[in-house]
Each structure stands twice: as C-alpha cells, then as structure tokens.
Image (tube, rainbow over all chains, first blue to last red; front, side, top):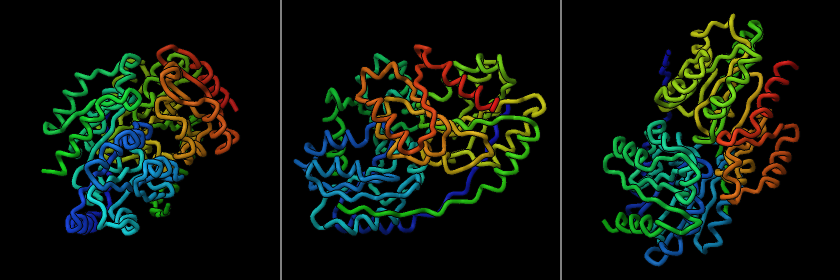
Length: 215
Length: 215
C-alpha cells in the first residue's frame, strides 16, 4: 500500500501570539486554550466547572465558533464575562482574533481566561493564541485511536481530558491503550477522566488548573 | 454579549478540482467525498458496507489522515484497492492531493471511488476535491447542535449519516431536532440513521449511493 505525505504550508501567527502572551502576563492573567473535536464536551465541561473555578479565580471566557452564539449563551448563564468569536467558517482561532476579543474584556478584573476554541482536533493545535497552556478534550465515543492519529494536539496540550467516561461500557474505547499512547506522544501530559453527566473527575480537572495557575 | 465575526481568506482549489472532475467523468468514475469529525465512524461505516457496494461496483478508496496508515490498513482487509494520503498535519484533503493519490489507482478498473477525508467537521467542506457528492457522518454522541454550529458541511453534503444511533439512549441527542435543523440548512439532504455495531441502516446508506451513481 502506498502512503503519500503532502504537507501544507501554514501561516505565521507567532508574533501576535507573543504580544498576547506579554499582555496577559503584564495583566497577571493565566490563559487556557481549550480544544477538542465538535461534540467532545468542551462547553459542558466549562458549564460544570466554572462555578468551582470562580471560587478561586476571577474568570472570563472567550468562545470560538464558526457560527451561532449558542455556546456563549450557555456560558453567560454561569454569570461569567464572555465574548463570542464567530469565525464565519474559519477552522480555528488565531492570535489576532483572541486579541480583538480580549479587548472587549476588562483585563484588570480577570486572572483566569479560558479560550474555548473552534471544535476541531486538527487546526487549533497549530495556532498559538498566546495561552499559558493548551488543554484537549477527547470524548471516549471518538475512539482510542485518536491520540496516534491526531498527535500534535496531544503533544501540545498540558492536560488531556478523557470525557464522557460514563459511555465507556457502550464503546470499545480502551482506556489503557489511550493512556499508553498519550504517554508515548507526550510523557508529561496530565490525564484526567471526566463525566459531565455523572459529575465525576471534575475536581481533577479543576485542581490541575489551580495547580498550573499557582505554579 | 458581543459577537465578533472574523473571516479568514481561504485558498483557491477549484481549478484542480474541476480537472479532477473531468478526469473522473471521462473514466466513468463516481466519486464520494466522505467527511465527518474524528471518531464519527467514517472508516467503520466503510468497513461495514464495502462488501455490499462491491457487489454493484468496482470500488477503490482514498484514505486521508494526518498521520498513520491505520485506516488504509483496515480498508485493505476488505480487499479493496486503497491509497493512503498523509497530510502531515494538514486539516483537509485538497484536489491536488486527491489527484496524486488517484494516479496510483488503475482508473480504468474503477467505477466508484470513495475518498475518506481527514477527520474534521470544518475544513474538508471548503475544499472541493472533484467529487460528485459529499457525504457527512455525524455521530449522535457529538450532540444535536452540530448541524447549526457547522452548517457548511451539511449544506454541501447530499447525505447526512446519523451514526451510532445505538448510543441514543445514553445521550441527550434529539433526533427530531437534528432532522429539523438539517432540513432547514439543506432541504434536499438525505438523512440516514445507522449503527455500525448493530448493523442497522447500512442498506439505506448503500441504496442511496447506488441511486446516486445510477442517476
């Protein structure tokens, strides 16, 4: 069987990302770039954990979506400042978008900014937005082959959230295999297992964020 | 709440796609561009239906992945000619990639070519590869809000495969809502409901492809 490697040339985004990073550092804001496939459960994870995080931090959220403000509306109900970015078809957030969205927030009153990226396991990993850490959500319904098939996003992320573990009995997802592959791709990655419907593992995720902000 | 629209400029791909389309038409090959999120079940759908389709057609498959030849290996076990494209991080197949992959196939011996795109609900929809129809797989575990949030791929697709319906009892996916939203976005779209583990709905998918090739 033939395997053809065809690499695209990707754009430059680093300069603005570095400016963002300096801005956020000056304002003492820790930034999480939250990524994952459509439907992996990113927004629900935020809905279920913002109340825990706001006990520790003054949190704001930037929501990235192609269209609609549905996710921002869900986050707004958590009484957290939120800005929605619509990319109008664009497959990822870039640093310039996050900059413009951040200008709508009162950066002097925030110390944790969570950027929920466009649902996509590929492109968001390639575009630094000036975050401190990347986090990736993988639903177990997506299959345990995803870390090896989409390694960059797992290589780039400080934490992998294996989500919807309540559905494990109904899938052939092999947790041990996924953990082994994740550790091969990124030995330092923190792995947490969560179910937002059963509300399990959510403290692990929150505690990891707390430890990162404090360190 | 503020909603910012920030549109990226997308590359040009149409010329090569039109050349591909002419090539495939001259060779009497019907081409399906199969798309969907990572883990929506595209490869498993092919595994489960290639034996049905090869009764009617001489089928070949082009597999698109960022890395690995895992999907092509799975398809090869179905005794169907297959070429793996590795995009080395690229988030979609483009027409030039499909052209180069097609050059490895004996186009005189094929009349149905299925191109399984990179797992991504966004970018593949924007890049015509010279196909006759696009098809999109949506796993019910991804959530019923996906058609409205990622409308382009559903607008472009002749058929939407609502997959993993065996997991419906364990999700809050509202089939009626999804069907209504799909019909709003694309009134002519054909909707099939499949479970590859329970082997339901697979004939609906195959019969739709057969009807399209014949028409």
